[in-house]
Image 1 (tube, rainbow, N blue to C red):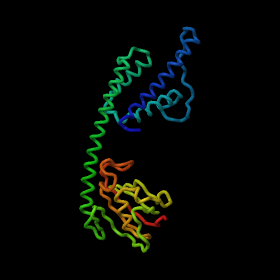
Image 2 (cartoon, rainbow, N blue to C red; image 1 turned 180 degrees about the horizontal axis):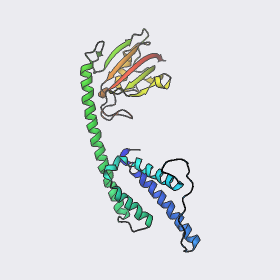
Image 3 (cartoon, rainbow, N blue to C red; image 1 turned 135 degrees about the vertical axis):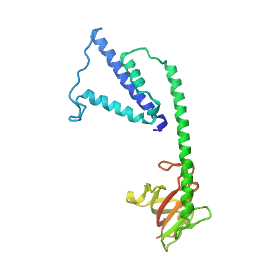
Image 4 (cartoon, rainbow, N blue to C red; image 1 turned 60 degrees about the horizontal axis):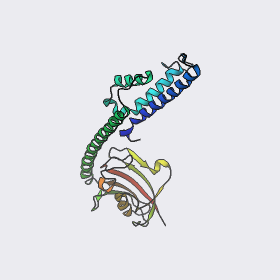
Length: 256
């Protein structure tokens, strides 16, 4: 779920709980024909032995509170927990809400826009920092022993020379590889999966396609791929915007 919209999850959960409570209340009222009913007594814990959660009510309450809290971490600085608790208590007690449905919708839409703008600003700042860090690394790395630079700015080093054929842009290749961010974090690895991967060189990022075409079957290269030859400013999946990427690649075969 998009972190910007995760604040909606606890609202859905709370609404579900309140809806179930309302249904239960209506059913009880009908069955009791207007008579008061006693509150449910706490029962034995669902999972015994949890410190501080001695009853089933304790455990259910904590579970719901923890779920809501985790979902709302991203906006914790925007919330006043005393007001949150008061709103929940008003709902539990059946008091008149301070907000109409239309006002709630207006506030939620405005808050969503604010969060989206904040997230966009944070991502832009991170992307700018990543671009500067990547460029600084590449400027230094190009002078390291064995590192070569192509006209596009792709940097590579031959770790093991092969003596097979070189693939073309239209080929499918079988490779073992490991992809890393600038800080060394591995974001993808065929080694970890325990089996080689097959890719069409027309279906991968430009730096990958260009680099693998430099290789011969049986070789192993390290590539340092500038952001503009990788996933660019937008990034993708676990890869941040403007991230420079490092790949270790073994070309095992050209798949005919």
